[in-house]
Amino acid sequence: MTQPRTARVLALAVGVVAASLALSSCAAPGTGSTKTSAKHDDITAKVSVADVEKLGKVTVKMWADQAEQPLMKSVIPDFEKKYPNVAVDMTYKSFDDLTATVVNAAASASPPDVFQGNIGYAVDGALVKAKLVRPLDDVANVYGWNSGTGSSTLAPAKWNAAATTFGSGTLYGMSPISEVQGIYYNKAKLEKLRLKAPASIADLEKDLPAAKAAGEQPIMLGNSDQYAGTHIFSDIAVTEQKPSSIVDWIGGKKGSTFETPGNVKAADTMKDWASKGYFGTGYDGLSNEDAIAKFAKGNGVFFVGGSWNGASLKSADFGLGSLVTGGVGATASPWHISSKTKNTAAAIAWLDMLHSPKVGQEILDSGRLPVITDGVTATDPLQKQTLTALKDTIAAGTQVGYYDWSTTNMLTVMGGALQEVMAGRTSSTAFTKTVQATWAKSHKQ
Image (cartoon, rainbow, N blue to C red; front, side):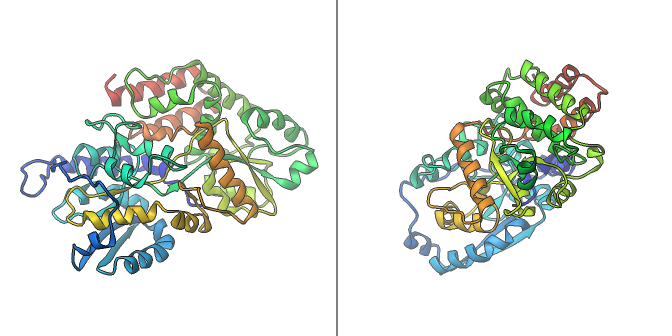
C-alpha cells in the first residue's frame, strides 16, 4: 500500500498551478485556443480485438505514476499479448513530476494517448476545463462500470461542464486503485489491556483513557506533513454530520459550508485528545512514515490512518478495524484518455483491462486495494481485514474523499490551522472560519 497520492497533491500546488497557468499562454496546435474539440464518437459495444486490429501497427504512449511500475510489469505484457498490433510506450514519473507536468503534456502537439491525472482542481479540473480528456460515460455504460462494487468509486472523476464542481456530472476518468481509512491496532497490547478491536470512533474514544492509564501512548500520530491530522479529524467529523454534506463541500457545490456544528465539535475533539496526551508529544515534528515505522516497532496502541499504511505492518502483530462510520478515502489517481488520441479503441481496451477482476487481484496481491472487489480474494489476515474494511465502508456510503481536493491550497490551510487548534493556540470556531474563507475565495462564493 503506497503513500496516499491524493493527500500529497496540494503540497505541490505551486508547481501544478504553474503548469495550469502555462496552458493559458500556449494554444493547442492549429486551434488558436487552449481548448480542443470535445466531440467524439460514442461507443455502443465493447471494443473487440478486431476493432483494435483496425488501427494497424501502433504504439500507444502512456504516462503513469512510478508507483504503478510493479503492477505494469504484468499488465503491459498481458495487454500486448491480447492486442499484438499494439506496443505500449510507458513513461513513469514521480508523483510530484507527473502532477506538475501532465496538464502541459496533454495540451502539447504530441500528448500521451492515455495518462494518469489527479483528482481535484489543480490537475483533473484543468484537464477537463481545457477539454484535454475524452468523456467516458459511454464507456462506463457499455462496460458496466455503473454497477457492482466499483460504481461508487467513479464519482470523484465526474465534473460539470465548466469544471467548477466535481462529484457528479460527466465522467472523465477511471481509477482501478482504492483507499480506505481504518483503525490499526497492536494485537498484543489490546489483549493486555483487555480491549476489543474498535469498529468506530466511539469505540476508539472509549479505549483511549484505558490505554493512557496503562502508560501507553494511545494513538501514534505523525503530523509534520499535515494530512494525517486532517484524516483523523475527518473520521470524527463524518460522525457528526451527513457524509453527503462533506462530499458536496469538497466537490465545490454552491452554498456548501465548513462552518458547521459538526466540524466545530470534531475540532474540539482533536484538541481534547491532544491536550490529554492521546497523541503523545512531538507529533507535529514527526512524519506519517516515521509514525507508522514506530508503530510497527511496538510504539502506541492504535494508529488511525489509510490502507496504504498496512504495507509496514505484520499481520501476526497488527489488525485493522473497519471504520464504517466513515472518513476520508476514495480512489487514487484516475486514468484518462486524451481527447486528441487517434488510438481510442486501444485506449478504451486498456481501461477495460485495468477495470477487471484479474487486475484487481494483482492490485491486492501487490499490497494495495482494488476498486473491483467482486471475484477478488485475500489470503493474508491483515489484507483480509483491509479488503473487508473497504467493502464495509463502500456499503455504508461514508467515504467522503479528501478535504484537500476542495482547493489547490487546502492541505496547507486546513492542516496548519488544525495544528494550531490541537496546540491550543486557536479556537475550533476560528479554524472552521479560516477553512471556509479559503474555500469561498477559491469558489468565489
